[in-house]
Amino acid sequence: MTTPVQNLKELGNACVKEQKYEEAMFHYTHAITLDPRNYSLYSNRSFVFLKMQQYHFAMEDALMTIQLKPDWTKGYFRKAEVESRTFRFSEALQSYNKALSLQPNEPGILKAINRASGMLMKDRRADQQIPWLGAGVGIILGVIVVIADYVFTNKPTLTHPLLMALLTISIAMLGFCIAKGFRYFVKCQRKSLLEPPIDLYPESNKDEFENVEADKESEKERHPKYSKALARQRFKKGKSPLSIPLTEFSPDLDKILYEERSYIRPVYFLSTLYCISKTRIRIVSNVAASLCITLM
Image (cartoon, one colour):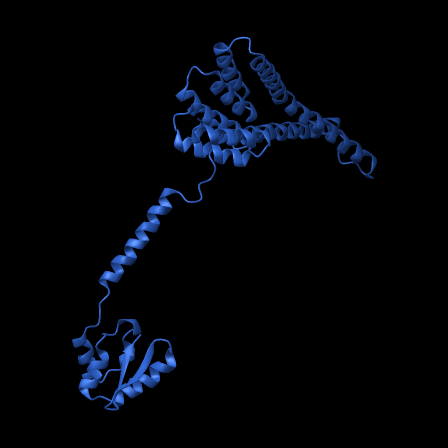
């Protein structure tokens, strides 16, 4: 009888065969949530992340595989594959050798070691040759400049052989520095391949959002409310009720107006307020033909 974890693993394996790596990643992740100690699931997901070029997550799963099963060959092999893809050939060779020590004479591991060794030698050769290649290009450009100055100008600027040599050497040194800087830039780009992706919503932003919400709640608590007595006092003084925010009237304001028999003021208030916002109030008439307002 198959378990849900086995079913999800089989679904992920089927998606890998069909090269549906994103879908396989979801199946493996679901299975890991059900069985977090299953090292083979981390190994499979590491392979999927590698195919998706998500090297940081692939390395994390490879390290988790090694942590859960230190004597398993495939964990070190997954780690070596990620290191090889990110141009860390020295580290990859160490991981391959560790895997080979656990499973000697494995053809796949031996083939991977040979491939990583060749790439390491090629990379070191490039570090040595490319700067001198830039210097060679600089020498050619310097010679072209000297010849052009001698042929295409009526009065050549570079008349002394020492000046010609200095110009050529200067351009050659410039080419060497540019090529050296290019290799340094490539190395820095390779180092960033294993860096975690940018977190668009870090925990600090969550804390700031919670603080803003707390400030809003405290501001609401501190905001004064207009009571019935305050409304009565303002109307006795003849102050316009429009100075009070519409959303903060006392619910008994209509009763106050009726008790005070202040009908002229309510009529003026209603006509003005009705022009301001038709959705905030409604007009109610009673049997005594007096006017009052009721806040919505």
